[in-house]
Image 1 (cartoon, one colour):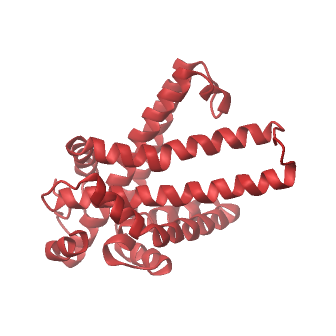
Image 2: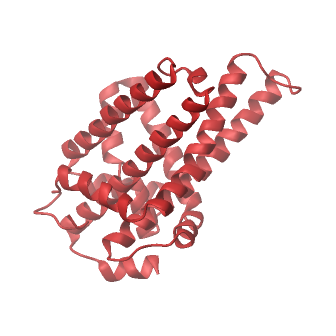
Length: 259
């Protein structure tokens, strides 16, 4: 499936999105995999390890309150790096949809130039879904589906966080059951991969100590990089498919943005 080809308003094939996501990763594995690992997986693993140590009462020479502030700073920095990874993978995905192979430098440039707007989208979406989850689970899932293509919209259309969320809500209208199926597919796949990882490394589910072995670190890095890459690619493809199905092809505009 070429991104953007669809049979009708709000229409796309879940099978084709997944297949194209795998093909996109296979066509540019070093650029996409390196971006996801260096900018998202590795910092998140370090953050998780630091949080585990903090929870166990290890504050170093800082004490509890300063240690908590430092941990919060590391978390914000980690989210910022992950936003750069989002932009890099969106660039690689839509460049391939336009018929070319994006370089690592090109993807990083797009990631850095869109980092603030992507971080804003992440923060606003996370706060909104957290508030919805406190009220009721179902609205949080609806928001997750409604806002699923906000990041590619922010990058491609140069939108601020609130406009990107509104744009995503508009594009996903009529397609949210399919997006929910995509979200559920990745959730189940992630759970299966994570269970295999923990079984091999001898850890317990959601237990950070499982990473404190060489096998645990390597397996987690591999599965997190793979799943992180595929999910980012898939939602970028969904964005382009929905946008094209409702508004028609816009290849020239994509070439202008990603040149």
